[in-house]
Length: 266
Image (tube, rainbow, N blue to C red):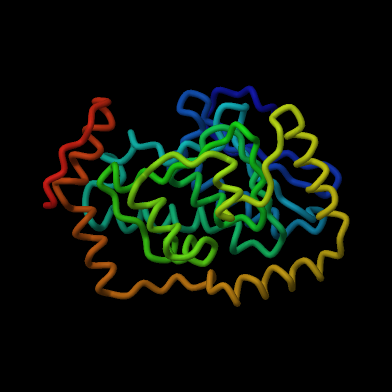
């Protein structure tokens, strides 16, 4: 499949030991629908079982956006009560953690907007390479949304407490250069050299010994504590309360109406 399709889907393109997993939803800046999240889970499972795949590159279709987050227009359909919310978060968590759970090296190739769930997906990759024009946002608090404990834990493992607090509490936009300075990305490359730089890096990784790469990744993952999905019960209760709050409804409504939300803390 080419990368010009207007269908919201995940495309997998393979060549020379490198698989490119492309999130494609052009109408919504590659926002992830629930179907896209399920396809991501399936794609990573298949690639992990494919002996010919030595390295995986995750990216978004086109040049304007890596992944702009979740498709918020689906929230009322899939997050209408706590039971539905739990199922939605189960699929979401499995999708964005798929790169971390995979046994093979995964590179995030980031152009344009990397926001919300797209940023979480990138954080769960082993290496993040950004174009100079890329930018990063974690807008959950601006939308009245809590964030699952295991996913927060992965951010803290990568960036530390202070920087994660800044990203989540301010919901501000972070440039590629700042992302490099705080350790959110590994490399920043000029836009006109970006594709070739990512391809060259992926080829170098794919040329290395698969068993050596596997044990390095697993050792890093265990030491960093990014394999656990255990959620403390009191934190889950707080997340449930946030999900069911009037502020969560207000956040989604304000986003749709393109206005500033009025949060009341209830």
